[in-house]
Image 1 (cartoon, rainbow, N blue to C red):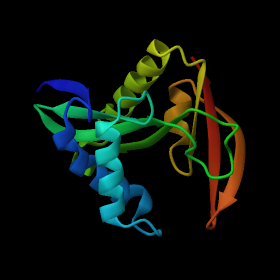
Image 2: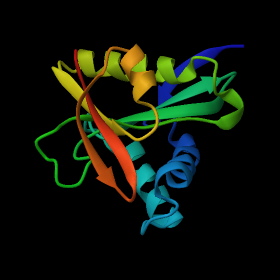
Image 3: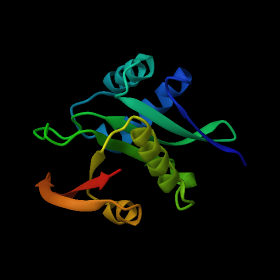
Image 4: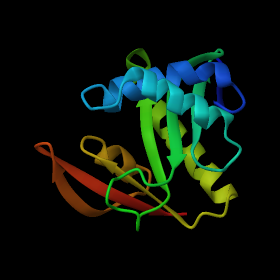
Length: 154
């Protein structure tokens, strides 16, 4: 088994997979259509700016997870930037440390870009991020769920 991490800029053929994952995991119940999400992922893959950028974890050249570095991930909070966003590991590959691998890779990318800190928000994975050195700086309620905003100084 060989694990590698690439970006959708390096492998734009992966953008339909990451777009589908992002839509299913985070946007499927909202106002964003799958077609809109796929178009967004294609734009990310074509961009030459630092953000947004999507990293994809491959196992033997097959995509098994993703994470993104982006701006303005939480509506109404432009004071909190940039963001680790869209961490996703395919169901058959969970529980094997892949989420942590993706977090570490994104943090390394942010350090390389001389970003001093990152933010994220989560309703269900605060303990995963805490094990990677992230701290809760605030909480908020949305759609009946409580979310933690977390920060990591790099």
